[in-house]
Image 1 (cartoon, helix red, strand yellow):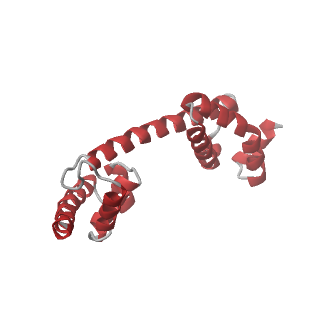
Image 2 (cartoon, rainbow, N blue to C red):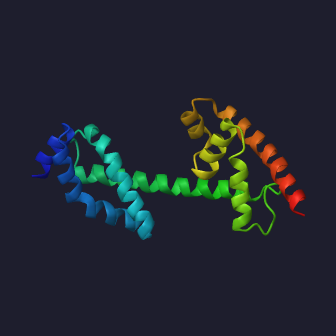
Image 3 (cartoon, one colour):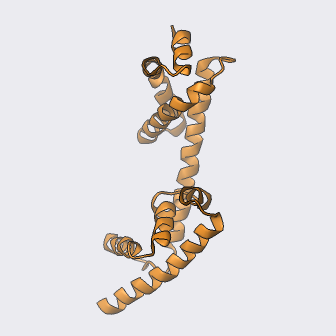
Length: 176
């Protein structure tokens, strides 16, 4: 039965694909949980794998067991999530360590002021800041989204930091 569903799903049969996902969801989720040891992360990975599976199923050639191939998809999604978490922590540290943008005791209101100031940047600077610091993309991913080079993204971020220092410096001076 599974072999027939796989064959149909590889051929684009949406109903067969849905049945295949339903049959394997518990395996996907439990495998993700074993690797992440976190319910929310396991759910995120399981969803990501189901989305990826929609396009990846066409590449399954049946040369090995489907479950083994699916296991590799889950493990890759877990690794992607771990890499994203590292990037997010690094970006948050970079952003929060910029003394011109944050006081040491920055609170939620300070962060709101920063994101409000980001909205006043030029569209290119704002887009770069949002993609890198809010969405967690690295410079090359942001460049791909924006259709420009990685150095261009880095330059826009540099200019955005300079501009934010000025904007936030004025707000602090006016407030005090």
